[in-house]
Length: 121
Image (cartoon, rainbow, N blue to C red; front, side):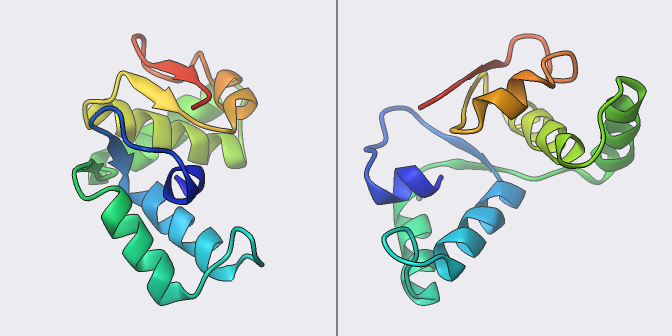
């Protein structure tokens, strides 16, 4: 999301997990330049960049099952967070998951829903 705000034009309708939107705001508003920017500018940039995006919430019933599903496959820590984002994106209609963090998301391939393609932007 940070890269998209900085330079990439929208080519397809995006599905964005609400939690990832908060994370992008946090990174944009606290990082030094050239990534960082004042909080008000970060909020505006995210709103404008993703005005046509579908916002996918993490449904209340998804949290504990995702954690259990991830732990049962031998993953913990940040991988639980990665799995929750991937599952919420899929649940929100995404079938193509774009991330600069491909390596982490590919390690959860057994957790990500079948039919969710993970690749870099």
